Image (cartoon, rainbow, N blue to C red):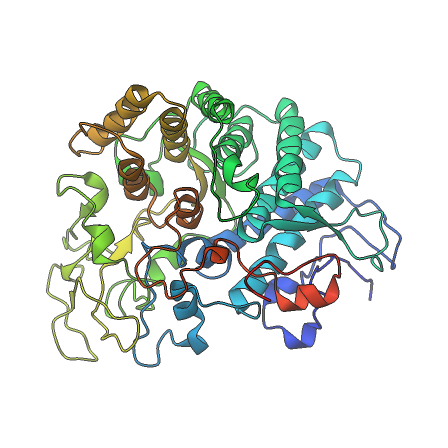
Length: 493
């Protein structure tokens, strides 16, 4: 059997791992290695495989869990034995993870594999356009490694696999990612908004650059927990990159929930064409709803209460008009739930009406406890969104506020709020902007990054370990063993 190498930075024995992403069965591939040699592969096939790998972002675990479960808008109650899973969800919520946590380990493996695969594409004699797409994909995956762990292992394909990968500091990784994106931009296609935008584009690169410069103070800080100093020049750059996305034809969607459906017209920058968003409704819906869910994750009443009642982003109740899936509402599902015919649902386990409550405990929760969340509706779901224009719009508003243009930022935020049916704000403070970002971007996977930037990550409901070192995850213990160039992040030794 030929040996296909997709270098795993942890060096874990495969027999000890349950994560299927650690071994990729590349039947259409391509890159072969015999220890230290490298043979260029078919860049088109490699690139197609790299795009398929974006399906990992649609999972409810790993990348998504680290970015969302650790923040204060998602809650993982254990219901009897359901969702116990040896405490992996509870520890994410409470910030009590350690270097052996499965999501920490598996996310590290997934992301670093994808960075290496993109490097293989770049070394496989691609066209200028193919190289640009590979550099974007490398930057997109490396961004998450840098953001989650603050250091990035890196290996060139020409280096022997007997040599431990070098490790970039967070600051070095930031510069490397920016360089990749800036080099990619001239050869990326200009693509306007479309619900099936599954290829790297100028807009996608500019959106990621805007995110990078908005967070530059975090990534360049002497200490990962701050303090963070937001330089006005960086805020200007973030706004400029945001403007470049706008200039490619992107604008806010008039109907908020159209973003997450096949009807999306103006906001979708980059999606995963591999996989579907179905995990987003399965992970929250009750067993007795249609479709039948896994009765898992909820939001918190404190977060729900930040919305105006008139705000369209809070959602709308189920129609229950006889059409398939019409028993499922949009946004936040609270109170009595109905089936597709509009009839009240009875929980077959408790024999009581299925009424989703505001209160929900972390352990020992009854099956009906907790407010559920639906953004991708099973009746009309679109592709899973990785970059959306509203984030870019909010990046510009925040960059303006941090750069001193409070009036300009307030106007942008009020234009957004009015479009969403909410009342205009009289003033705009950092706390008010933080709340607005939450209302627009909830459950889309990036709340942890926002909380860290605003200094709120260790303050959320249910956080048991409020120590500042938790703004970074621990390097998996298996990675530390296999690569002596890695050092464990402070607080986890």
